[in-house]
Length: 450
Image 1: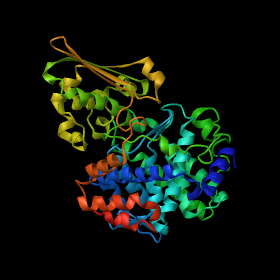
Image 2: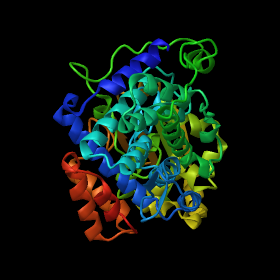
Image 3: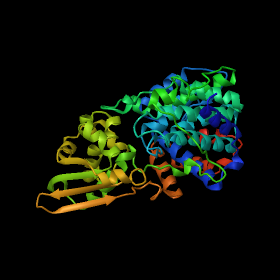
Image 4: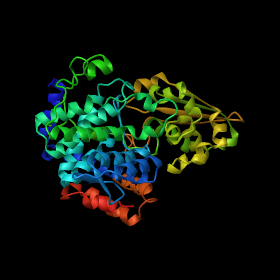
């Protein structure tokens, strides 16, 4: 095996719950709460219905629960269906350095395998922290927007699934190889007018990661140098080798503590513009707007400046990636919620009138400070010549302006309560916050049945 495979497999097999500092255990529980709230909030979506239908048609002697139901499916299809629910609202966590994406997309892998083997809470916490290390440590070396995040998710999902299954180092190495070699997705998923697949691509990576771990558990071998070998991932994907020197533990921090929780159900780069637009809502009348100038860092403004679809979104998936659309909603409505993305709201001519008054530009200073800061500035010029300005470096949810535990609970209720009862929300949260003491996760699944 090549160096990267050996590093990841050795780390995965040797990491224990006792290696995790209290703040890491706590952050895992915060992340599980955030992720499952997003999943319940996405339960009624069309992509989730499609995924549940297909998963429900599959029976398996080795099965796992489909979130929101008492139904069971194969491990990989349960992981896929649950992953689609997690991702639909585009409100789960983010990690950028500057590569990355949404590492909580991998949590359904740990949950599916954990449910199947009746793993206890500490095993799941360890598997989730492990998945984040694999995802984030590779992401630390990936050029911004070079890869689609599924390349990272499939590796972390395989590590998590393999950890819960109890694979040895050789098996884990093959699971990682069998995950990454067949599953290098195209970033076209997130270009132009976005389809339903935008919210399903990482779920497909989760499914593939689970399947890879199952194959390795049965003795299947994969290519021996998936990363550093000739025509391996480093050569084919970026053209140069990546050197991962450190993983979490001892004196090295665990990367899950560097993730960002979203406050609004939309792409990470839209969080700051939404925050500022909502701040300006009470200071302006949209009928008095002459023009709107938005400045941010390159990664935030690039899609708006290069893709005309972001100025006239036709799908929910495009709208939740559109700074023009979401800034217009914030300025006019003073809020952005899942209801913002109803079909009639996306097509609203009144929002187009506001969008037509906007321009979005890169601020070189903001780009220089990214990803440590998520700078954005909105200047609204009124018809009478007066201006209103709002600016931020750390929108709500950023590591320097994080959601508190109470905020995480409130977000869970806000997203989940339209679908399940308040009593169910309280029951689920109580179990999640005591995850390290649970003998299994059946109660969590039961509490979330719609």
